[in-house]
Length: 161
Length: 315
Image (cartoon, rainbow over all chains, first blue to last red; front, side, top):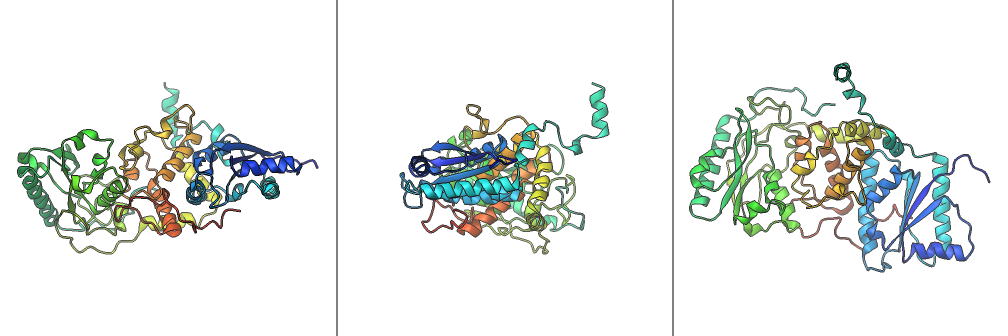
């Protein structure tokens, strides 16, 4: 099917569970949208909120963070720490004014190829319906100061340089 | 929106006798501690170069104890001088510090993060009536119009757990919580409105990093925002980097910020940074029942976990 808008989805996944789960989806020949770009990390505990910001700034329309189910972490507690961190980070992004529908967190184990397909498909379709994420991209291309600083006095001073 | 309190009243909040009493108590305590050798230095406030201002002072000589003052212009959070980043002061030995209630919360936070040991510091607490906000004229007394926003809803005027307390708290009128109202107003906005609110504010940022320099909790020897290989946050004052910097700053302080609002005071561009800090403190209290700075805790809310933490947002 042809779509007008193909969203870019960046998925930050942990190598032990979700990456293996996505691999299982592939070897099982399940179909899922090619919009997703998978970035592999040792653990969800390694995924810094800055990575999510950077992804949005560099053109992602949606971000997925996925790792092992609670209790299954290869490093015992990485995903528990990540869970708290992302719970807080979601609240912060919401307060700054980001639509949280573009940011998905999930637990996908190495055996859940089907769930991976489901999560990725659902996120892709949701972001497709929402359209491109413009906020961060606009910031990225904006060079100038805010209008408030752009006063006639400053303009005159600038012209006199 | 301006960052100064609205015009309400210009009658002094407390009489000058209160400040004289606090100053006297601080001087006596500092002289005693330095003379009997309990501490090697006292970190306090002295009169600034312009009349009616104050600035931080570190004194080691008991003869200089009379330089110390306390006035509504004593806005600085002196806990900043006790982090490991300020090694020279710590090397001198045990130090005494003049601390308002909000500064003591920062001290408790630093102790929890192993920056500071309780036995290495002698806390001279001030029963604080409040300090002046930014934009207040230097000569005028503390009034309901010029009091700092954080002081309008202070819950730690009577400090607890100090080694000595200077002054006794005068009775104060109930003040309207300007900052809580502003936070509620923002929370009621749509995400799009909030985005344009913060975009407008952050676009003024000149990336002087005064908010980082003044913060007692920003003591990392290398800030991740200064690194450029790989660069996580753009360092020049452009819109994208500004937004990222302020988000990262708020994130790194969430669960740690003790609410002294020094970042907002130091900001030359009047960005309401404490709104972000307050929002995160509020959320972490709701999520994990944590309130920063009430007592030294070994682990903050984002450094520990419970197996039954809320995960309703995770699919």
